[in-house]
Length: 89
Image 1 (tube, rainbow, N blue to C red):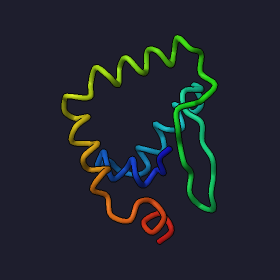
Image 2 (image 1 turned 60 degrees about the vertical axis):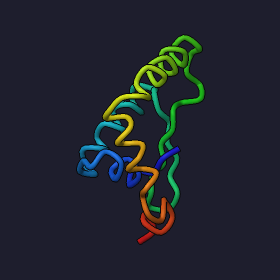
Image 3 (image 1 turned 90 degrees about the horizontal axis):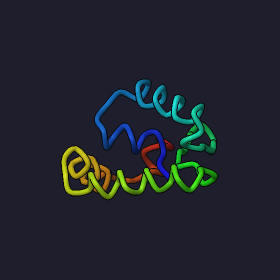
Image 4 (image 1 turned 90 degrees about the vertical axis):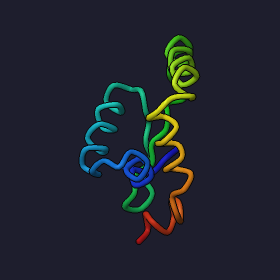
């Protein structure tokens, strides 16, 4: 589960663009969200069909050793104060 601010930090893209694309993924049923105060947190929809979960898992396994996956994961890991202080500022 990631807050929009975490995705924005990792991908170094504007927040409106991230929110727009996450909204599209939510409407398609691929991610689910929950609101906490002013902040929205996203995660892979736990109710996805097994075949969809299998495709996503295979995709993640296939990209783990390559950029931009490596650099995005590293940026997220180095994010200071994640997520409470940053999102609550």
